Amino acid sequence: MEEYKDNFDLPAKAPGTALKGQGNTSPAVDRISDLMCRELINRAIKAQKMSYAPYSHWNVGAALLAKNGNIITGCNIENAAYTPTNCAERTAFFKAVSEGIREFAAIAIVGGPDYTIKDYCAPCGVCRQVMMEFCDPKKFYVIIAKSEDAYLVYTLEEILPMGFGPKNLGK
Image (cartoon, rainbow, N blue to C red; front, side, top):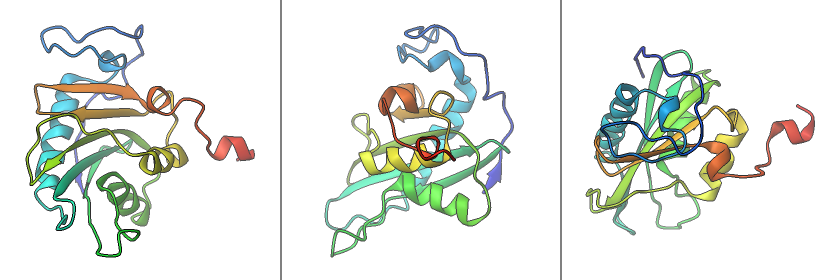
Protein backbone atom coordinates (compact mmCIF):
# COMPACT_ATOMS: atom_id res chain seq x y z
CA MET A 1 0.00 0.00 0.00
CA GLU A 2 1.32 3.38 -0.96
CA GLU A 3 -0.01 6.70 0.25
CA TYR A 4 -1.22 9.23 -2.29
CA LYS A 5 -2.70 12.60 -1.38
CA ASP A 6 -5.18 14.49 -3.53
CA ASN A 7 -8.48 16.28 -3.05
CA PHE A 8 -10.73 13.26 -3.66
CA ASP A 9 -13.69 14.48 -1.65
CA LEU A 10 -14.82 17.34 -3.87
CA PRO A 11 -18.36 18.65 -3.54
CA ALA A 12 -20.92 16.92 -5.73
CA LYS A 13 -22.20 18.57 -8.89
CA ALA A 14 -25.30 17.89 -10.92
CA PRO A 15 -25.53 14.41 -12.47
CA GLY A 16 -24.50 14.19 -16.10
CA THR A 17 -21.86 16.93 -15.91
CA ALA A 18 -18.81 16.13 -18.05
CA LEU A 19 -15.21 16.77 -17.10
CA LYS A 20 -14.13 19.31 -19.69
CA GLY A 21 -11.45 18.24 -22.13
CA GLN A 22 -11.60 14.55 -21.23
CA GLY A 23 -14.70 13.46 -23.09
CA ASN A 24 -16.07 11.72 -20.00
CA THR A 25 -19.80 11.98 -19.50
CA SER A 26 -20.19 10.02 -16.31
CA PRO A 27 -22.55 11.52 -13.74
CA ALA A 28 -19.96 11.53 -10.93
CA VAL A 29 -16.97 12.67 -12.98
CA ASP A 30 -16.75 16.16 -11.45
CA ARG A 31 -16.78 14.80 -7.91
CA ILE A 32 -13.30 13.27 -8.01
CA SER A 33 -10.32 14.95 -9.62
CA ASP A 34 -9.00 13.92 -13.02
CA LEU A 35 -5.53 13.58 -11.45
CA MET A 36 -6.79 11.08 -8.88
CA CYS A 37 -8.76 9.13 -11.50
CA ARG A 38 -5.67 8.83 -13.67
CA GLU A 39 -3.48 7.74 -10.75
CA LEU A 40 -5.96 5.05 -9.73
CA ILE A 41 -6.34 3.85 -13.32
CA ASN A 42 -2.55 3.66 -13.70
CA ARG A 43 -2.33 1.55 -10.54
CA ALA A 44 -5.19 -0.69 -11.71
CA ILE A 45 -3.42 -1.27 -15.03
CA LYS A 46 -0.27 -2.31 -13.15
CA ALA A 47 -2.33 -4.60 -10.88
CA GLN A 48 -3.92 -6.26 -13.92
CA LYS A 49 -0.46 -7.56 -14.88
CA MET A 50 -0.47 -9.64 -11.65
CA SER A 51 -3.78 -11.34 -12.50
CA TYR A 52 -4.00 -15.13 -12.41
CA ALA A 53 -6.69 -16.16 -14.90
CA PRO A 54 -5.63 -19.40 -16.64
CA TYR A 55 -9.25 -20.52 -17.24
CA SER A 56 -11.15 -17.47 -18.44
CA HIS A 57 -8.11 -15.53 -19.66
CA TRP A 58 -9.99 -12.44 -18.46
CA ASN A 59 -7.50 -10.35 -16.47
CA VAL A 60 -8.70 -7.63 -14.12
CA GLY A 61 -6.89 -5.07 -12.00
CA ALA A 62 -8.25 -2.70 -9.37
CA ALA A 63 -6.88 0.19 -7.33
CA LEU A 64 -8.79 1.14 -4.17
CA LEU A 65 -8.38 4.59 -2.61
CA ALA A 66 -8.75 4.61 1.16
CA LYS A 67 -9.87 7.80 2.86
CA ASN A 68 -6.49 7.93 4.64
CA GLY A 69 -4.80 8.35 1.23
CA ASN A 70 -3.51 4.78 0.85
CA ILE A 71 -3.99 3.04 -2.49
CA ILE A 72 -4.49 -0.70 -2.27
CA THR A 73 -4.32 -2.78 -5.45
CA GLY A 74 -5.88 -6.11 -6.31
CA CYS A 75 -6.13 -8.52 -9.22
CA ASN A 76 -8.44 -11.40 -10.01
CA ILE A 77 -7.27 -14.83 -8.89
CA GLU A 78 -8.98 -17.81 -10.51
CA ASN A 79 -9.26 -21.36 -9.25
CA ALA A 80 -9.96 -24.59 -11.15
CA ALA A 81 -13.01 -25.15 -8.92
CA TYR A 82 -14.35 -21.69 -10.01
CA THR A 83 -16.22 -20.89 -6.77
CA PRO A 84 -13.01 -19.99 -4.87
CA THR A 85 -12.13 -17.45 -7.60
CA ASN A 86 -11.73 -13.91 -6.27
CA CYS A 87 -12.32 -10.73 -8.26
CA ALA A 88 -9.78 -7.89 -8.37
CA GLU A 89 -12.10 -5.51 -6.53
CA ARG A 90 -12.66 -7.91 -3.65
CA THR A 91 -8.96 -8.72 -3.49
CA ALA A 92 -8.23 -5.01 -2.97
CA PHE A 93 -10.98 -4.61 -0.36
CA PHE A 94 -9.96 -7.73 1.56
CA LYS A 95 -6.28 -6.71 1.55
CA ALA A 96 -7.24 -3.30 2.95
CA VAL A 97 -9.61 -4.64 5.59
CA SER A 98 -7.03 -7.22 6.69
CA GLU A 99 -4.67 -4.30 7.37
CA GLY A 100 -7.27 -2.42 9.42
CA ILE A 101 -8.44 0.00 6.71
CA ARG A 102 -12.22 0.32 6.53
CA GLU A 103 -12.98 3.72 5.03
CA PHE A 104 -12.80 4.16 1.26
CA ALA A 105 -13.28 6.92 -1.30
CA ALA A 106 -12.96 5.35 -4.77
CA ILE A 107 -11.91 2.35 -6.83
CA ALA A 108 -10.63 2.10 -10.42
CA ILE A 109 -11.16 -1.10 -12.41
CA VAL A 110 -9.67 -2.26 -15.71
CA GLY A 111 -9.95 -5.61 -17.41
CA GLY A 112 -9.91 -7.59 -20.59
CA PRO A 113 -8.82 -10.77 -22.33
CA ASP A 114 -5.20 -11.90 -22.05
CA TYR A 115 -3.95 -8.79 -20.23
CA THR A 116 -5.44 -6.36 -22.75
CA ILE A 117 -7.92 -3.57 -22.11
CA LYS A 118 -10.37 -3.17 -24.98
CA ASP A 119 -13.53 -1.99 -23.26
CA TYR A 120 -14.91 -0.90 -19.91
CA CYS A 121 -14.99 -3.58 -17.21
CA ALA A 122 -17.71 -2.98 -14.62
CA PRO A 123 -17.70 -4.74 -11.22
CA CYS A 124 -19.84 -7.84 -10.78
CA GLY A 125 -22.78 -7.90 -8.39
CA VAL A 126 -20.84 -9.64 -5.62
CA CYS A 127 -18.12 -6.97 -5.75
CA ARG A 128 -20.76 -4.22 -5.68
CA GLN A 129 -22.21 -5.83 -2.56
CA VAL A 130 -18.77 -5.89 -0.89
CA MET A 131 -18.40 -2.20 -1.71
CA MET A 132 -21.80 -1.58 -0.14
CA GLU A 133 -20.58 -3.18 3.10
CA PHE A 134 -17.78 -0.65 3.57
CA CYS A 135 -18.72 2.45 1.57
CA ASP A 136 -21.27 5.23 1.58
CA PRO A 137 -23.06 4.56 -1.73
CA LYS A 138 -23.64 8.29 -2.30
CA LYS A 139 -19.96 9.21 -1.82
CA PHE A 140 -17.96 6.20 -3.06
CA TYR A 141 -16.76 6.48 -6.66
CA VAL A 142 -16.38 3.57 -9.09
CA ILE A 143 -14.09 4.36 -12.02
CA ILE A 144 -14.21 1.98 -14.97
CA ALA A 145 -11.55 2.61 -17.59
CA LYS A 146 -10.20 1.65 -20.98
CA SER A 147 -7.14 3.86 -20.40
CA GLU A 148 -6.06 6.89 -18.37
CA ASP A 149 -7.80 9.01 -21.02
CA ALA A 150 -11.01 6.99 -21.44
CA TYR A 151 -12.89 6.35 -18.23
CA LEU A 152 -16.33 6.59 -16.66
CA VAL A 153 -17.04 7.52 -13.05
CA TYR A 154 -20.15 6.57 -11.11
CA THR A 155 -21.18 6.58 -7.50
CA LEU A 156 -21.83 3.18 -5.97
CA GLU A 157 -25.47 4.21 -5.61
CA GLU A 158 -25.67 4.72 -9.39
CA ILE A 159 -24.44 1.20 -10.14
CA LEU A 160 -26.19 -0.48 -7.20
CA PRO A 161 -29.53 1.30 -6.74
CA MET A 162 -31.43 0.31 -3.62
CA GLY A 163 -28.38 -1.60 -2.38
CA PHE A 164 -28.57 -3.58 0.86
CA GLY A 165 -25.98 -2.74 3.49
CA PRO A 166 -25.25 -2.38 7.21
CA LYS A 167 -27.73 0.52 7.55
CA ASN A 168 -30.55 -1.84 6.53
CA LEU A 169 -29.71 -3.89 9.62
CA GLY A 170 -29.63 -0.84 11.89
CA LYS A 171 -25.81 -0.79 12.05
